[in-house]
Image (tube, rainbow, N blue to C red; front, side, top):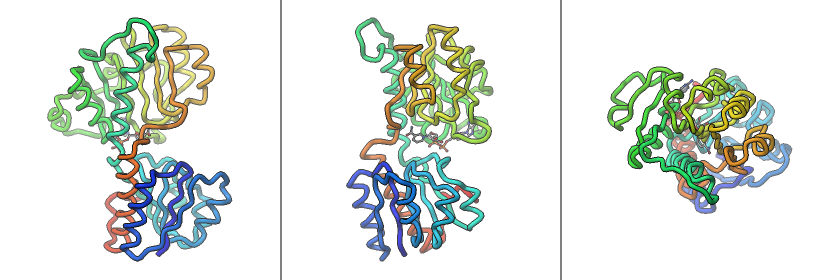
Length: 307
Ligand code: NAD
């Protein structure tokens, strides 16, 4: 069995060593393709592999077609919008993610972003505190839950909306108030922490109306995906309301324009960094390797996302 680890943005060395150790033990061959700069390198590397571990790397229909022996792709991370699921399914290739493995890293970044914006992006001047403010969580999945619990620990009033979680106990046990509409969520949010996946339903779903409904001085915190933002709408709202702020992990298409227009009210990380901790790297990388072995040995498809 031959497994390709294709990472434009490489894993930490410790993660690579751990992945290799798991495959060595299983008797599999590990092939590393790191920091590749051209799609052609990826197309060549996938030609004869049975499995693949990727991070934010794009697995398009072309990549899947070029991978003649491919049986499984594991996205070491949560979001899998970088994989063409239809093309994989059509060829019988199993696609998995590693949910939860980098959630803590992302949750810590979301909280850090709130404090950073409350303190004028660490520039001189009087800031404000996050304690006592309302933290509204849009989607209460792995990351959302951790943000909620950490927000509670910091003395915030935490509310959350997730239409796919019907069991109120999920929110209650964290001391989080469940709200029943997205409008209610945004209209109460001093900080809105975004954790929805990028899907057909969510792309460009956060825009002018929701932003305009937020309380005075509110901050939108996006550690999800840039695609879920209607950038034009957000910019219009921030132009009309000089109290609103936006911070995002992944620069928007209009980043330069936003930086120029909104100054300290806007910030984008230069490179997506939510999951960029040594711990998250190792957790997600090792989980991906273990899931591949478990799939080949036991047929375990628990984390398959293209069922
Ligand atoms: P998750 O799958 O555990 O949770 C997603 C939640 O979204 C689920 O509870 C689901 O019910 C909810 N949801 C789905 N559609 C929704 C909708 N239309 N409205 C409201 N809720 C909806 O995922 P997660 O691990 O919490 O990650 C959330 C997102 O964060 C990922 O999809 C990914 O795009 C992003 N992410 C970013 C980074 C980063 O580096 N910045 C790292 C990890 C994840």
